[in-house]
Length: 303
Image (cartoon, rainbow, N blue to C red):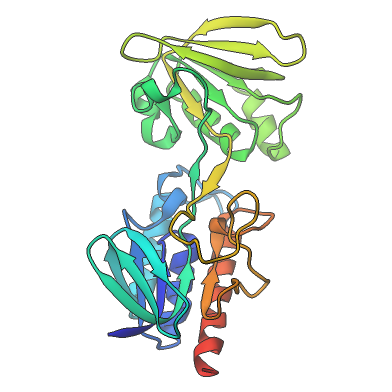
């Protein structure tokens, strides 16, 4: 079978693309290696997605998007994409278990959390180091935890952790947060959250699980060791582009597209957090996905 559109990735961008493509009556296949939703599936509450006054749970929104795509006829296959053959008019998507052909490909594979890259980190991932407070916060009830980061995610997850942990120490390498002001105000209202600016983690230690972390003040160069049982890391994302060597990427590895989501290869589009862009939010991912699907439609109609 030759699909009209194959979408790689089932986050908000990929699901929006699937909704628009299948609603246009194109044979649409979405390939997702785990469960649909991407990062929003592990997000406790989305307060700024339009249309949901009071917020909506990320997993619930993901399920609504998936159901909507299926309702319009999109097929969802759970498999991992390991390669792409894009130079022919009929594109090929290679997965662990199969090979699929399509007239167009939309890449919406998202990004993964960046690591700290400090001594001890690799020893404790899954044993005290986490990249998802929504997933793991209940394991740290009445314990002391450290959060690393200064953006919206770091503050949102710190607030969520404060509901479980005895104490939350949030460190940021700069002297002010990048996060939205409303989140900063909310964070500072929690008595069990403390903030350390101009601070970076240097080393993580423990026997079997995290017990302590060495911190350094980047201005004074002074170090200190604090005892914690958990460390949550929110320092940004790295795009999942290892399987797309044929496309033009920027210096950070993100796919370069134009405003219509077109990549450097004809008939191939990219959307969401995997592409070079300024704002990485659910609403912009959905917008990207819609535009990618429309661009794929125009490409098919003209070839």
